[in-house]
Length: 300
Image 1 (cartoon, rainbow, N blue to C red):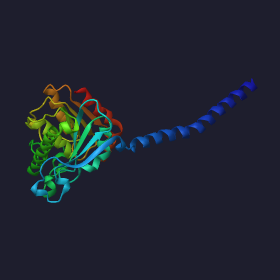
Image 2 (tube, rainbow, N blue to C red; image 1 turned 135 degrees about the vertical axis):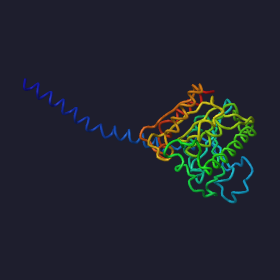
Image 3 (tube, rainbow, N blue to C red; image 1 turned 120 degrees about the vertical axis):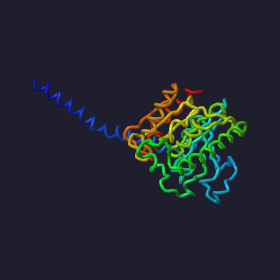
Image 4 (cartoon, rainbow, N blue to C red; image 1 turned 180 degrees about the vertical axis):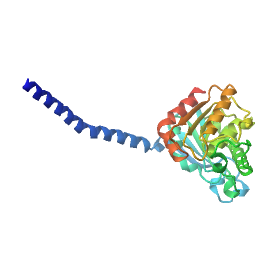
């Protein structure tokens, strides 16, 4: 009996020793894999053409490249057997800052899935017109405006950015043969102010030269839903429930509105514990990119 107890204790000690030995290696592997995932370089998988002019230089911008009508084009490397779906990415910055270069990793990773990604600069109205009470935070941090209207300065900034987004869409149409773009499969997207622009352009503007097929809304919102005239366009929305700059209520409100209009293809992803900007981008980059790609594929 005593011998059996000793044997069982030895086996138990061996098991504990093995766990102690293996656990650090196991944890190290997980952490290394996570670090590798977050720091992965996708630039080797794409070709990038920078500072392509998509429309005439605005008179008002002088030498401010961030407010000029320029774009960067990310194309997947290798021979593409079919035409490329197109994804326009409009950067954020409150219509007073930011640049198309600020999310190269996002654009490169998305292009590696076989998508032509276009990152645009556009006229930053609030950078050159300092207007009290016109910021996104002042207008959007506390929820939907009771009046249904933003400060006039923010309203004008969105309209101006939308005009430039239409010019970028026209450039895609005009250059579809050169770059093998599929003009029937265009997604317009952006982060924060860029997402506001994408929603406004895709849902609230009449145009005929080229149409938007999908919208990917990264923590943006609309001034009011009554502006919407293209309510059947599928919208994929990501928004953190801890966003203190653009209230998550904008995401819920728009999604409810589209559902009432019979839009069955739109999707809402609320990111728990996530705030605005950097944390949200990190979450999408590391864990939600396939959701975007699948959304585009589903709505072909």
